[in-house]
Image (cartoon, rainbow, N blue to C red; front, side):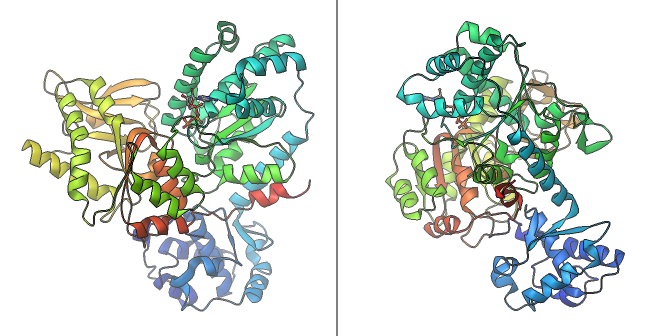
Length: 589
Ligand SMILES: Nc1ncnc2c1ncn2[C@@H]1O[C@H](COP(=O)(O)OP(=O)(O)OP(=O)(O)O)[C@@H](O)[C@H]1O
């Protein structure tokens, strides 16, 4: 297992002593982990150093996106950094943790077998497990007419080409909870649109009111893409009758759907006491949903509503703790709670991008390298030791096109140019990091245009919104361009999921320059062409899931810049997260 912690985060805790100090000095735990451990052990008068170490390691695990710490695995996972350290013997360690007052009321820690949790995550896993079990235990949804269902499936998913989607849609119609999985372009949205039409037809046949539908995704960008794709499918593939039954709908972020509360960032207006009114809830990009958010969503969805969780379990998991989609896929099916609905055939890239993505997913470096080196129109491998000039030639024309359009006040052209290309980096800092490449691209602009770009806000500056701002109506993941108005002033045009917004730069707080972007932030978005800058082979962030997520952001073309060693290293490392949800779900009722 690999920690997805940026090396630049580590810090020394000056007050640390004993084992905690040794682990801190070795760089295994950071100051914040030491503080959590010290606070908890002091609060409950725990003097055993190995328990304090376990606490600090749980904090470290959560920072890296895990929900818990498996005491039997942590030493292997830490690897070389911890080789010289005095690790407690496993039996004694488990005995000390089991006997610790930290497991007693108010239960700051919880132990499940060998998995150690902070109470909050333990409760959230428990809640997700319980609700999903209850949903699976209910009598299956009533089918008004089996004949009509078959006829509807034949109509909406005709012939052999749609057989996978047809099976997935039928499965989803017959169960309350469905996890609909597939890689890019495998027809997830097509299946969703057909399923909605099918369920609406069934409701009409049963004499029920037409279903209330919620379309949602974790980010504004992903919600916008979902709405656009469902509308496109409805226009192209559904009949006018289907469209009438489905009526009007709008995709919203999960936060918006659940209803923000001014007094809390983790509680929502809709919960178990005030359920969502919808009969069908479709969640896209579920791989990005954290355990906490999934617990809140499940709390709020009515037991008798269809819930369809759509996503690609091979992508990076959520920024916050959890690997919910992957856990649900494996746990719910293994536990016999639901039937799988998996789409395997890509209908989009026919060619090399799909092949590269599959080979990355399956951990086959030979195939990845062969396809990348064979080239073709859609895949390029830049193996130069110093790719600076190659990148400049590849990237600068689009950057200058954004600038020219922005200078002319042509918002459409500037935003279209922005969507053409993304430079994706694993790191934020360092030679392969976003900051470095943002500065490099700005230097190229200066060289080309003689504009020194003195100000933070310059014409053509592309930006990424990094936090939701409900007052302005902009959301984490939205992108925009700085445009020159005819009067010479600068405005930022944000392409938000709710339409275009034209804002004064001074109103924008949480913004980053977007000449380069981290792969984590690119989740849920796509660009026509993507350049993936591989970090050095020793980078701990470089994992199979990260590389897969980067490559699958490309719609038409992908350029991978790096060494063979970096590619091999990415494929050999997994961004696995310690969680207990799949084990819980897989257990018999
Ligand atoms: N069975 C099929 N045969 C031919 N084309 C299809 C089929 N299913 C979907 N398509 C087309 O393939 C493209 C991708 O489909 P869709 O958008 O549904 O996939 P997706 O899994 O939602 O993609 P992504 O997750 O990458 O956005 C669309 O243009 C769609 O019209």
